[in-house]
Amino acid sequence: MSPLTEVPLGTRVVVRYRIEGGFTDALGPLRERDANTCTVETKRGLVVVPLDAVVAAKPVPPPPEKSARAERRQL
Image (tube, rainbow, N blue to C red; front, side, top):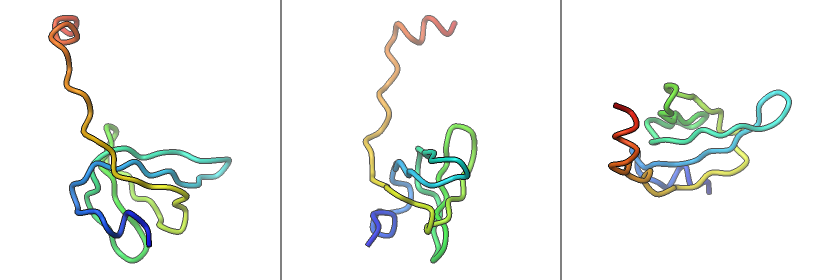
């Protein structure tokens, strides 16, 4: 059974899946899933991944918090 069918929606996941010419990853909260696809909310928007293209998937910890130094650089 795939981890994508076991984790609650909203869990931060990384999903590696096949695309033409190789593989790519989607990283972010798992927003939706059905029998054929899962949807991950990435920094670039929602990515709908066909489950039959998934080669690996797992829950991941939250992103590290920005340091005060990094926030000052953005100003």
